Image (tube, rainbow, N blue to C red; front, side, top):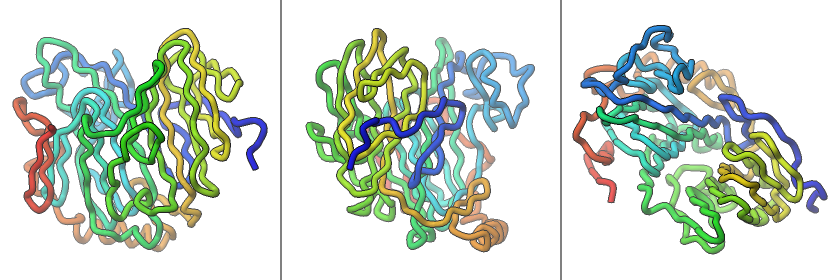
Length: 337
């Protein structure tokens, strides 16, 4: 039975957003990078930044772990998936299987780390004569124990192929999960929890014009949990309750909840799914079910490097001229349509 109050809990948004099982991690990067230099890094002084560990947001942007180009040089993962929603700017992916991609401007990369992969995610600043804004969500979706050692796999959802619903001043981008009125969702990677028919995973982004209304439908599955992140705008009524600061709101997934926007454009991210409900053992980039499996992940990475690193450096990018593309480990290549 639905609760009478649709908001079950509310938390303020920080750098890392709170999540609910089956999700592990969610972060919103929104960097206002300056024009780029010849090395595709910022044409600006890096003084005052802790290079290699810069999360300062000084002047509205960070270098993160990048030293010349912003981003995240080679690092390993095992036991979960990353879903990267690239809203503005570009991301250069390179990995230990020899795969590569450049994606952005609405594209989504869905990477099943499975038994282990090393990848880098760099943010090349291609525009030399104007700013290079870069905005993305990175979401970690857990894998159940039976899928944690699946073969690594990545899928590209090119922006123009992602189903969307537009009506009454509302635009919903449907990365995962069916939504009445939108085209059928794209297929998630085959070993994903989202590919299980009863997992009820949904990943939606919502844009609401001033005064717009939208009703989040009742979740399809039993036991589904839902988190709505209100991250842009000034005020939003959620099931009749005023939310006047940016927040992560756990909603009653068994209830249809009406959103009514205030006087300025608003944006939300919604993550939902049926919990995997298994023990979680996490240490940095490895997410398993037991501490013994975490120790094994470290041992395997030290021994195999999850396939090695076929690139010339730890932070490769794909040059100044290349368009959006993806090259898979088998050599198959696709370009953004």
